[in-house]
Image 1 (cartoon, rainbow, N blue to C red):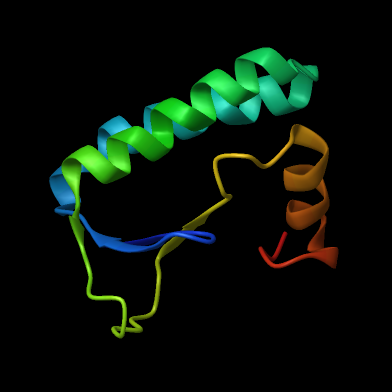
Image 2: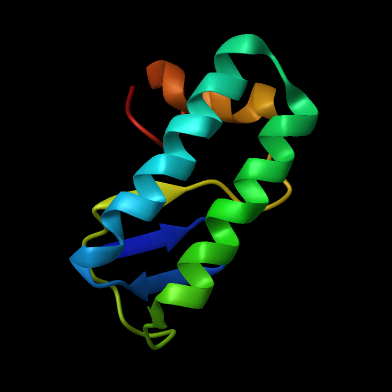
Length: 92
């Protein structure tokens, strides 16, 4: 699986890591729905750290189709909501 972190690049991860990433993604979604900005930032950081830790970075000049696109580490909850609404970079 190829994962892109916006503004950073792409990582290749084994499909075996899907369960761990999905768990963090579920937590992130719950925090978005509840409006928990602090929890959102903490979980987003954990999700991005997991991708970096578990994945192998692709070369800067490589451009592979990404199965998952994650926001940059400094993205706010409001910015990610906008992206997910279909008006931004990540289709909703």
